[in-house]
Amino acid sequence: MPSFRPVGSASRVGMKILLISFAAIACYLAAAGWQLRRLMQRVQGHSRMLLLVGGALAVVLHALVLAPKFYTDAGINFGFFNVLSLLGWLMAVMLLAAAWSRPVENLATVIFPLAALTLVLETVLPSHHLLPEDSSLTLRLHILISILSYSLLSVAAVQAMVLAFQDRHLHNKQPGGLIRVLPPLQTMEGLLFQMIGVGFVMVTLSLITGFIYLDDMFAQHVVHKTVLSLIGWLFYAVLLWGRWQFGWRGRRAIRITLSGFGALILAYLGSKLVLELVLGH
Image: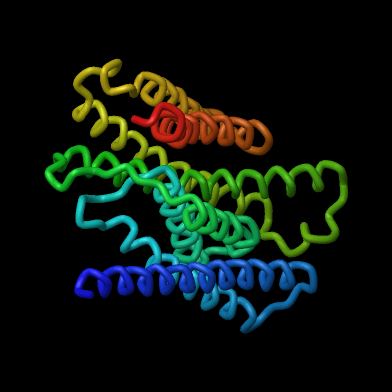
């Protein structure tokens, strides 16, 4: 009898987390749907506040799901789908933080469903890759900065895709529809380069802390991750240099942004996917 109660308690906790997950997913999708309605019907006024409140409720619920799955008795769980869910949550948080003062709420139509998808995957496919409690501060700092930088540059990548959509319609002389409710192209580009600038600094810090932690690149199975991270960093460095020296913008900036993002995602999530789910390290 005494051994039965903890099992029941664990079961109740698991059911509670599952219900909160469903609520968070519903809030994400409702907020994204509401923003899509605003775009289609050009609704203004207080409806923007409803979007922000709905998104804020979603990220709070998402955080309640993440916390007990990350911080376990055995250590911090950096399993693949746990990290994917954390990236989705951070993307949503960064979008909401920016949307209070910048016209970026349209990105919610993409980022909120992505955050909901990461939560679905984490719920259906739980993963475990424990970081021991006695891990070095340098390693923890490296992981934290890496996740923050990837999240910010993910938002920048979505912004670049919206810019590509906007640029294509303007070049084809089709300024109607959704294009009318988007901010001016120059404003969107300015926001993009601000996000890339901050993200570039964070990726640089991530690489520096990573090299401090690195002892044997081959033994630690991080060759591909290191090379792809450097390639991604180089893409962003070239883009920012071109913007500063030659005023690069438009399609060239979009292509380089997405190329750098692709390299970084392959570096982190691609390597993590192969090591954990394929090789079992």
